[in-house]
Image (cartoon, rainbow, N blue to C red; front, side, top):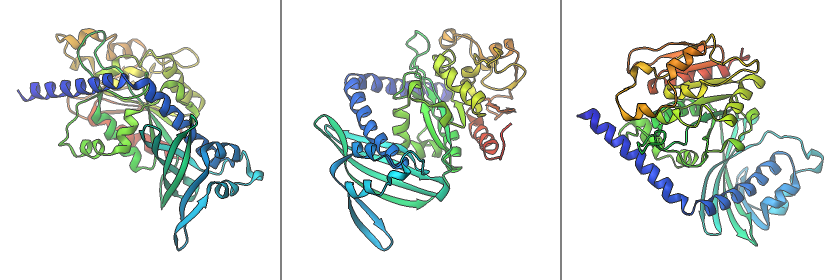
Length: 385
């Protein structure tokens, strides 16, 4: 009875997120356009301040903008936009100064927006949080004011790309599905505490369908009420927005929706193999997320999994008599083995992790944190094989 109740609650949660996404689609086009324009203004600021590009900074800030900063024993220090831009010397234009910018949150009401941004300076072990007020004037979004707070930080500036499915339903059915929330947060928490930054990408971008949420579970509760985290998974990147060289690793997250739209997505495949082959990065997957690596090929044409020890959610633990299973486009264990991989797993509800070179895979949500720790250990070594 408990299992049936849990399954029903999971389906209802997934369906609720699906309905919310559908409702949002009504005004989605306008919101997406405005959101993109706001991001453009912030990217002008990020790039301009990182590369001493005054032209980009002038695009970011309104000419009458004010910055409310602090220095030494002066907690209130008002600076004009012109003075701020003047700090960046022409002689340094185009030279990267170590500033890494990332949008954490955007709250827009009409022609006003508040953006929360993170600025990392790993070499100086500093992290700043900027609060930026923007307004759309004459059709253009610009920063009207900025205030910032800084702190010592162990953030290393290295980024991990989580790959997740956009599928809300199993195949062409009306059976709800979603990304395993446990698999997201258990891995994310390990990376965050180790000083890594995480970005999310999905085939369609935008809001993710979520499943298996338990608000009594401390890790779930921690991130469900973390507005920056929820903003990130509500505004995932599209594949077109991803620059492969920015990432040290990719991590395929499970949930049964991982069976749809990821494994055969050419741009996601290209991103993963570029990170792995051109940039010496790691490919990892957990549970049904292993479906995402089943079709990946090396430059020589061979499958990535050939001759490798791979784990994931085994075919043996599926339920062939249930409707969802009939929608699966392929089977994970069978496909991995057909392509020359050795598929390994442990009893149900047991963590199981396989590390084979720069390919790290786990059996289930209980393996998510362990997979992340194995990746962190490999990434923090001086050399990665």
